[in-house]
Image (cartoon, rainbow, N blue to C red; front, side, top):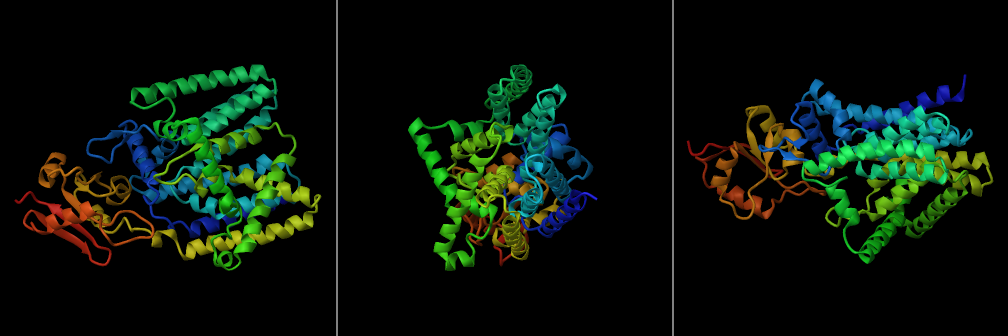
Length: 492
């Protein structure tokens, strides 16, 4: 029996167990994007186009590409309002991705390095944790890891596999805009390899795909690729952009990359032995750099893809939410581990015993971090969106419109049309009547660490509601979390 026949099922089961332990670690809507994907998937499934149908007057989506909602749409139709079922889709894509990781690197690493690489990737808490959310990372990983081996199979002689790789690369970009790094890198590799015929075929496919995408986006009032991403990557002067890239690069090398690979940074040990962890960060980054330059052959699609992805990631700049985040590394974590392992292999001159020892130590850290996140989940540190919203979901009419301070994240919990609070001093009663609002949820804004304090405007409206009980009937209250639900009766 081949080692892979035993190893792969065992490591997949281990990863699955860790992921399922964390199935409810992050509440739906806490990441904002996940709730948006749900809404867009339901819009597609119901035949309403690509819109944010949670609003009473649906809004056309111009920033998020449709790839992930398209995958989710059939499941939203089969399992309406069952968002745990949608999380299972992400989970199975991650399970399949582990197999693809093994297949991709099987021709690049021998045993035991191949097993070591697959194991640390499968146990990584960023990857296992994301696999049980409705974020797009698992889908992006799956399609990108499917495209890379397909290109390997093309091998310059099988145009069918090349076409498949190109289609998968394009669809990856439809899952997340940064996937354009996969399409650009494929053209670059074919150009540098002087495979002009293959490049022509691929270019035609991309021109057709991007033309259709651009036409749809422009028709809906957006830009060719993504108005949000283009604004964040291409805005500012050259000097401003260079400064942003430098700031991002400095942030990632300051324990973010190393912490994503070996999550010991930010722990009590880090606080106690700070100097030691500074040294460890330098060692990890050094091994990664050595592994990147020592890899052979260098002109491979995945290496060019890594460079272009990293450039796009560093060029991304959003001061409102932060531009340096570990989650942006998730799509390239398998490659980061590959370069790290390759660097270790080069430094130890292929001593497998050292590599196995290091892998065991890293595996213990990865498992421990997964268990820590299970024991102390993130949801306990964030505002609970379900309080009050769950009462609405259980008691309000299906066609009710609910006013909340987080319309998109709250939708997954109220499961009714949602709309924001009035802006710019609008008269409350006039706003409620114009929008047809039936219920009002007074709650703290979504934040971490959570707080029971209300925003100033929400607190002002709460006082107005409480002063007119004949018009705004209190139907739910949680004094500890400072959440109230009012039914708007129009004074009837």
